[in-house]
Image 1 (cartoon, rainbow, N blue to C red):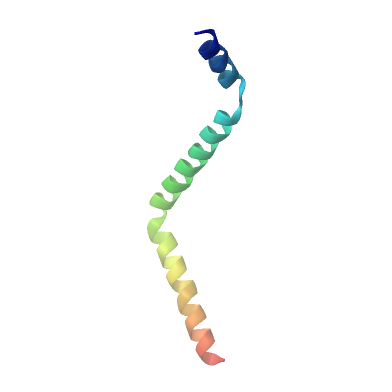
Image 2 (cartoon, rainbow, N blue to C red):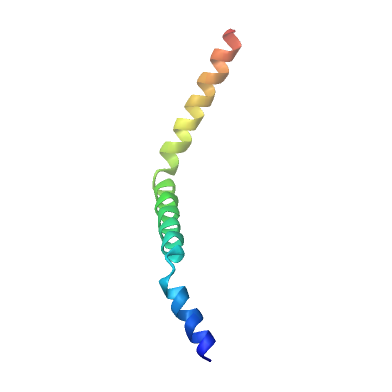
Length: 59
């Protein structure tokens, strides 16, 4: 039982979990931004791809 308690203390002292939580929060924010600006992003990508296509045909 003492071994489990010591393992729990060591796990509490580690800061690796904080990095995981930060990464998850950043991903949630990025996904929310993509969901909010989906139409603007798709129109931007379509315009960029159409410009690439027209300019590559000119070469």
